[in-house]
Length: 97
Image (tube, rainbow, N blue to C red; front, side, top):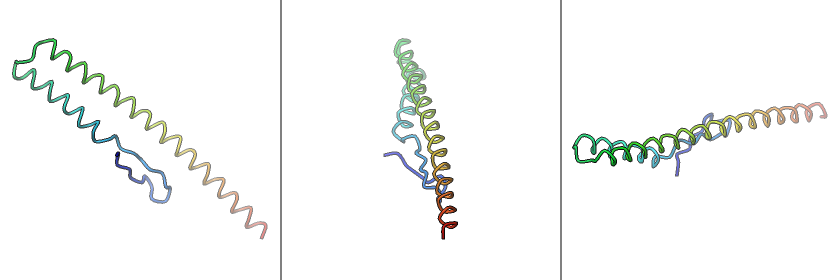
């Protein structure tokens, strides 16, 4: 499971890091490409396939990062609105006392 760490201990908003498996897969693809090229035992088509896999995975990771960022921004806005609403409620209940 991805590691979750509080962004701000008081806010209750969790920031999720990209899973280690995704990063390992990217490194594995990079190493595969380097080995094929440096040992000279990879055919041009194998090297091209390894490059294509790495580019596809990079695009996937960038897309996920964008989605995580958009979700985090939406959650921050929602948390801000909830805090504001809670402040209004508390202010209203104090006036009614």
